Amino acid sequence: MKDYFGKDFSFLKNKKLWLFDMDGTIYLGDKLFDGVKEFFSGLKDNGVNFAFITNNSSKGKKDYLSKILGFSIDATEDNFYTSVDASIQILKKEFNNSLVYAQGTKSFVKNLVDGGLNMTTEYNDNAKCVIVGFDTELNFEKLTTTCKMLLKDIPYYATNPDWVCPTEFGYVPDCGSMCFGLEKATGRKPIFIGKPNGFMIEKAIEKFGLNKEDAVVIGDRIYTDIASGVNAGVDTILVLSGECTIKDYEESEIKPRLVISEVNELNNLFK
Image 1: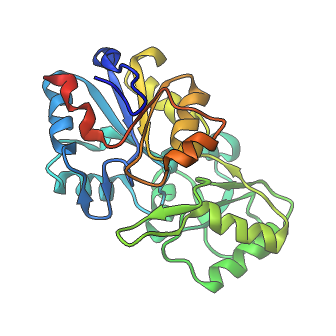
Image 2: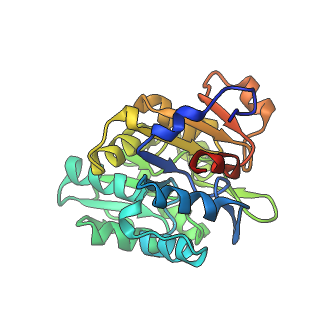
């Protein structure tokens, strides 16, 4: 069992927790990659824990669970930890019941409210911070309001720095690109909460009551997925089924422990 560069990966049999990115790693759009369902069956049959760690804040855990169940992968909401979860933890700690302005989807804002935060999507002088998520419902009115809010001297957060989100036809701008536009308009740069910050990885491992050496992070982006694992001190696997290419790998200072073409190359671990 060897990776793209001939490195042995049989040690992965000992991992007790697999932390998966989703878009570009196990599926693209509505297409599940070949062999993925079989791999998750192998994890379950061998009593291995897993969680989906996603930067995509446009949907809630219920939406992601519905999609995963639609692929006939056995999971519950406990198998998900998103940038929204991380945002709620950080914002509640830093701002408690203070008013927070958000730019994002209706689902994003609802999840923040359900998490106990006091939210607004309108301009408000009483807001103590700004948070921006990947907004698939973005319009010019939202951008204008956010720019006005960013003129205030208050903390500015964003869920994730991803430049693009993969689709069946290519890519669309993700939260990082949206924040870049806001930076050009206001001069403000956000504090990014999600990957590559190791916070989400560390919290997921704590959730399962395991140690860092028990876990492995697998994803298709070096600058978010792999970097988050490296920053958390966890083993990483880069898959080439999404955004990253071998050229990107060669040019990156951040290196995963292993590189594979697709998740299905790992299926022999459980045979």
